[in-house]
Length: 224
Image 1: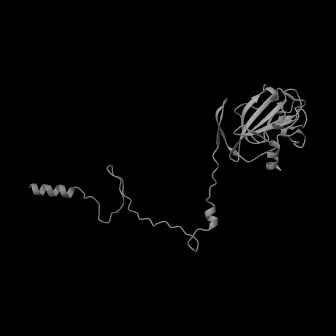
Image 2 (image 1 turned 180 degrees about the vertical axis):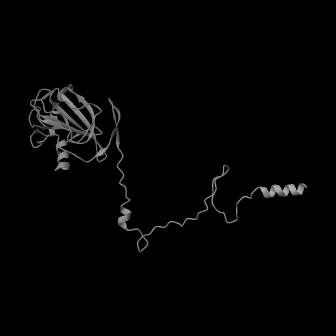
Image 3 (image 1 turned 60 degrees about the horizontal axis):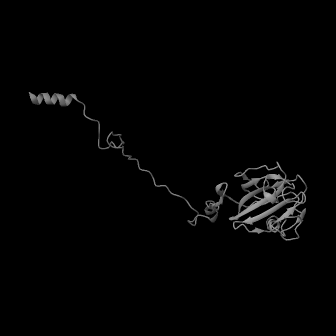
């Protein structure tokens, strides 16, 4: 009797339709499905000689930019200066000059007998421009003998260079300390403030050691 009942239960419940040939992946709450599909390996075709051409290899070359220079400025702290190679004259008519770098007869009471810069004379009110990209580290109307004075620091070829623009007109400063400027950007206009005998731009240039050098010769060698 019990055997007959068992047979009835067995025949009344359909069997699971799973065969040995059923290889479709099925999801499980206990384990991820297994992917049973086979993929052909990927291949890369190269030239007939089996090597990548030089032209194709060069397409993957990446030029790494030189690291910035970090300068410590009292009023700003650490200043990051990005390398630049664009250099321009500080005035539009650099051929108009009244004095160069080096020994001289003092032109006024309190003036030095060694000229630390070059004097450009393009005319009163002429725009004064930054010689290169950089950061303004000084902008004052009370620069002592330099009068209205702006200083910009640059990273030129990996070297820290500072350019100083003096004797500009009162009220003409067009930038502020900490501002990033580009080559040719106006900083002010030519004036005759401080120890000056007439309207001119006094340009001084110096390196990280603070030693002044001939800015006109330096600019001429790079601008032509």
